[in-house]
Length: 137
Image (tube, rainbow, N blue to C red; front, side):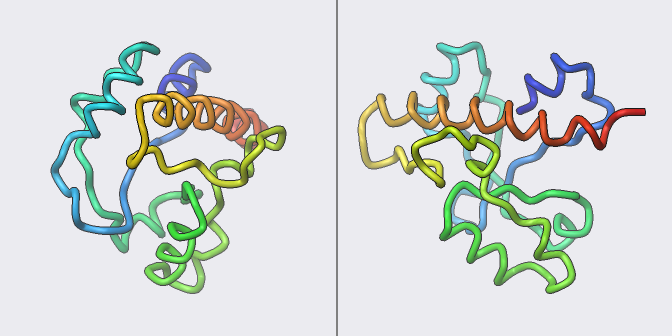
């Protein structure tokens, strides 16, 4: 998403961040398989570090995007009632996709990480297209 926002010339207008719903990987770099798959597509994931979503994130961001239904449930449990309409599934923005959630690649091989990148690239393109009308001056 960061690359798409940058390529669209919207880096100063769209803020992108990432956070998990749990605390078990705080401060860690992405999985080596994810870094390898991303690197093959020109994404440098090595500098990224995991963080847990914070209360302020629900007020700070206009949209909270989840990868699967378990994340949606966890986010709804953490989120103030007044901010729950901000939570959406990423794959909602890829209407031609075969799956309504991003697959979990962690218990499979490298191909799973490639599939996740395919899903995320398609959905992020759709997300940016959905955001564009709000960003027109």
